[in-house]
Each structure stands twice: as structure tokens, then as C-alpha cells.
Image (cartoon, rainbow, N blue to C red):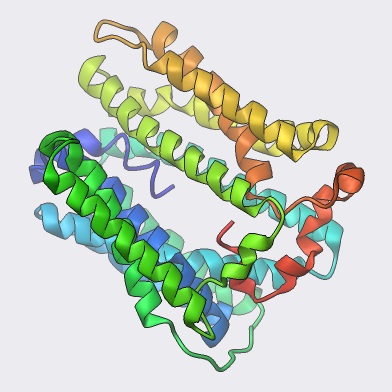
Length: 389
């Protein structure tokens, strides 16, 4: 919801705070860089301090970031608030998955249902975010797309003590150098890519910045190979199909988030939609994603297997993206956006579930055993070790 709800509000945020067209994407990027860069650290801290404690701490950080983003009087404050929100999410996500495994891991059938609902939470939040973003921006004001997190955080904090199991803390060290290198490496890479259209892809600035990002990420890998208690054990890449699943998730994120960003701007700045119609126009896509993840994808996986389902989803997403690339300044929602968006949404839903699930067992057993693959040794290890998928 934190990524989808701001899409409709972007033109208002740009106007009120003075973002340039090139820098507006940092309202997204500040969040996702902090979230992605600190996710491994969040998993490690969940092990060291206990998942329930870190879950609560994450909600407090997210609450503070939402308040800061909502009251922001200028660009740098807004981006700081979004980064703090990303930090909170990076603490919540791995501890939530650990708590889910603690609650339902004793029963494979319950765990399968819990993981299905956990996966469906993303499109449900996306759907709610698109609709709420339109309503809030149209009838209240854009800061409320951030303030809405405050009551949600308060409810989560109030319920955590009675609903979530206490997870014992354990001794260990925090990989500070690994955290710095992976976060700075990701942030530098994103900065280089966002600035490239303005500075020029052939410019020395772009390639030097990308080289620095590569060096930082290489340093991260080297640090992980040498530490006794790394943020990410490199041995997890020996897990069957993990590299393919990670690549698929990378492609899905790299395709979907920019598409969402530009569609919001196209609907409002090119087609002239106001905030509420713009948000409502994207609801069919997010509803289809939710139905696809909950209903269509599990059945497709059961019948055709996770690999075929993933590849089919990627092909459909590619077709939808190619179709959307043909939209013109004098296009229309009904003929240019909706049909292509629905094709892309179906592809997203088919590819996301199998590529984010635990690894498949051998092919002969795949159809019957795939939904219960979460009980494999790779997933039963340290709770955060499963999260990079």
C-alpha cells in the first residue's frame, strides 16, 4: 500500500513541494532503496532481538516516517520521511515472516494457507492503495496518503502483544560493514540509473557512479564470504532454483513499479484525469492481480508446475508492457491503458507467486509436494535466510 497509494498523489506532491520531473521518482526510490538495502539487516536483527520485538519496533519507525512525510514542507524532508518508512518496512517484513512460520509451521496445510494469504496481502494492499490514494487526494489532501499509516500502525502495535508469539532472542553479532556496503551499493546504482537520462548514458558521471555501485556490491559479497555470521549466507544460492526465482523477482519489480509510476502520470498529466478517476482507473488491474494470485496462479501451478506458470506470466507481462509502450499523447484509457494493463496484470500475478514461493522438490514429486515445499531444510534454517527469495 505504501508504494501504490502515493502514485495518484504524485502530481500534487510535485506541485506543492517543487519536485522536478526527473527527481519525482525519488518519492518511490527513497522508500524502496531503504527497504531493499536494509531487509537483510532486518532479518538479522529479528534473530538477535526476537521477531515480535522487532515487529513492534518496525511499526514505530514506520509511524514516525509517515508522520514526517506527511508534514514535509520541502523536498529533502519528504524524501527523508519516505526513507524512514522504508526502514520501518525493512524491520517489519522479515519479522512478520518469522512470526508466520512460528504460528503455522507445525501444520503444513495451515502453513500453505497462511503463505497464500501472506502473498495475497501485496495485491490487496495495492488495490486498497490505488483506490484510497484517489479518494484521499481528491477529497482530503496528499499528506493523508502518509497519515493513513498512523492508525494502522497503532492498531498493529496494540494487537501485537496478545496475538503474536514471543520469539526468543539469541546471541550474535551485527554485520555493520555488510549493511553499509549493500545499502550504499543499491542506493548508488539507483542514483546512477535515475540520473542517467539527465546526465547522459554515455557520460563519465553515469559510468563512474555505476562502477562505484558495482564495487560496493562486490565488497558486500566479499564481506559475506569472510564473516562467520554474515547478513546473507552465500551458500543459500546452492538452493535449487533460487537464482532463477531471484532473477524473476528482480524483473517483476523492475517492470511493475516504473509502469505504475508512469501510468499514474499519464492518466493525470496527459489524459487530464483528476485524482479520484485516476485511482479508480487502475483498480481493475489490481483486482485482477489479487484474483490471479489467490485463484488462478495456485491452480496453474498445480496443473502445469511452477516453472511453466512463471514463464507464462513473464511472457504475458512482456506483452502487456510492449502494448503499453505504444500509447500516445492523444490516446484513451479504454483502448490504450485498460486492455494492455489487464494483460500485464495477469502476467504479474502468474509469475509472482511461484517465483516468491519456496523451492520446488524434484520434478517427479512437484505436483503433489510443491505447496508444502516450505518445510524443506533451506526454509527451516535461520528465519531470515528464507527472506531473500
